[in-house]
Amino acid sequence: MGLILLKILPSLGYLALAVIGRGGWHAFVEVPALVGLAAAFFVVVVAALFVGGNLSSGVREDRGNRWVLAAFGIVGLLMGIVPAYTDRLDFWTIGGDGVRWFGVVLFVLGSALRLWPVAVLGDRFSGLVAIQPGHTLYTGGIYRIIRHPSYLGALILSLGWCLAFRSLPGVLLAALLVPTLIGRMNAEERLLQSEFGAAYDAFRARTRARLIPGVY
Image (cartoon, rainbow, N blue to C red; front, side, top):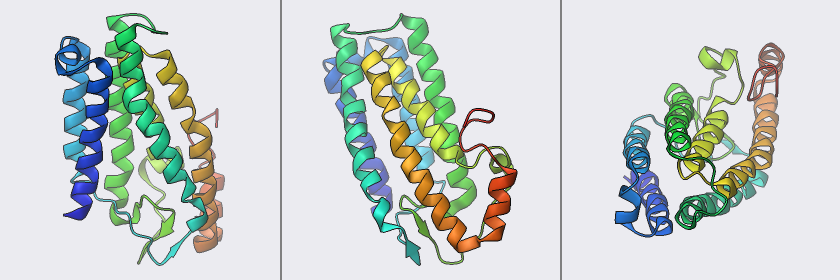
């Protein structure tokens, strides 16, 4: 029950920030693409309740990486309100309704990519950088292509969220997630290598792309 509330309450608060930034509920729903964004948002929140994952420190955790949670929190709060507020002011906005709907599509695709690995890994997927009890190394499915699909999903959905508000400042905020995610990936890979040794080295050699094949 606690984990469910931990997923629902921040999500509702995040959407509330966007509504406030846009100037209230009426100003928010007068834009069809934002209604679509809100609908997609609720579907994602409900789906997140059933895909698994946890916040357990497990049997071994890299506690030195917890600063990432604070960084995610700060950037996340800003992304909740800044794109909507700049959209309301028509300040540094990009394009029109086409950009908004493109953002909604990216949000949906990014959310699916974010949740897919959580569903596959179940309780092995933690909000902390940690080895869980009975942890095994999964290298199938999309992990044959990229090593951190959930983080790519997070970047895509964040970009989509900001584009739904046509917000250039929002896009710049989304870009701030990149160095934070790199720090997170570094910590995860160190921990997994120390736990699984040669098996993880072989996986990393076989799946060279961290996020985008041929790019990074």
